[in-house]
Amino acid sequence: MPTDQHTILVVEDEPLIRLVLIEALQDEGYLVLAASSVLQAIGLLGKFPRIDGLVTDVDLPGGLSGLDLLELFNQCRPTAAQIVVSGRSDLKAGDLPPRARFFSKPYSLDGIIAELDCQIAAMNAVLHRHTR
Image (tube, rainbow, N blue to C red):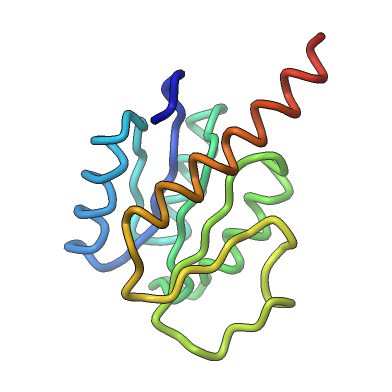
């Protein structure tokens, strides 16, 4: 469980999946921002300067994909946690930035949370080293 409250941006167009993921992350102590499209997510990125992690679906409405969002997110917040989820089976390792972790739907909520915890702990360790 995070010792300091970290902010996670969840981008999922399926309302039930989004709500279940939000609830699970909040139960673990995360502050959760939610969007159902890339454009909504970009708006949240502009409003909230500290977003510690992204969990995004690949296939989203509006013409931009979760992979497009991940590319932008990676440029803006390169040390933040990055998780991509999808029901698609045609994604390859080269489709994602090196630090992004892929989870196939249906995924384990515990797995998503454990990966976020791990990536955020690594991010905090790097930031702590640079602030000494």
